Length: 303
Image 1 (tube, rainbow, N blue to C red):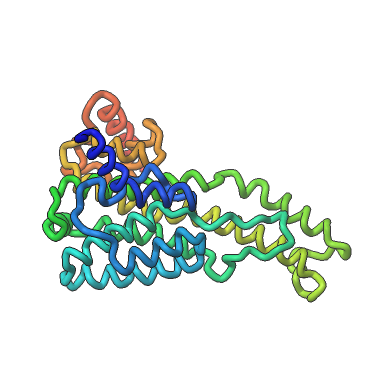
Image 2: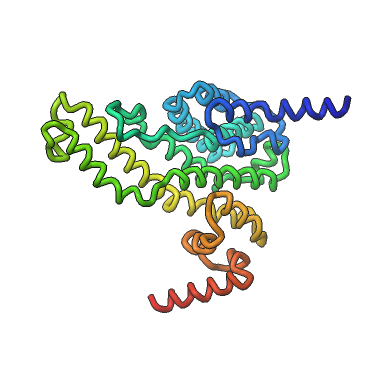
């Protein structure tokens, strides 16, 4: 009887996250807020996000996500968050973190990309989640939610790592080498074989216009994946890990690996984000860390 009861509780506990994963391409590896025993249910904001997500309406989902993130940021700034609001916020961050991105523009298609007017809403929302996590007062938040602060820190780190890993996996570093040839192919396929800047100037050119626009949008988003990660997300993520896990190099490295970085990239990533200082010195300990630091010092002395 007790065994059955435990299984029943586990099934209820996993219900929300697994149903999302099966139906929408949601990141099923992402731990849900109830995995750390938060006492509270989804609120109005997270329920609305879940509805859009389950229906596959990603335009509405990411439009709503950015509105929700703005509202949550305002509540956080004013320090007026109740337990119910804090719980709703955490579920919202979970849903936005794990949601799939827009389907990539198909540059072989003569149909317009359906997200043309919202082309970076998904990327911006993911970035804003990491920014929100990095400045959140985990001590106050854990008190609001009635949980141990360390559990919340691990949950935040998992969400940020999952977002970065997804964007890194979508970025194609060598796409620029193919882009010129792809543009030339679209131009050559036009009956009048116009110059690239002529495509789309005539109403009859819609088929070529959509191919061209889809290719340009694909390229633009490919660049955004890299720039958002390198210019914004990494610079929030690493200092957040250092703050969350002081003198716990293993935990910091664990989440860096979860974000899709190889062992040989870890110290370079720390160099360009947090840098070597009294707060990060513990990350450079050991033979490899010492060698890396000496290499960095030699490089700096030559500059």
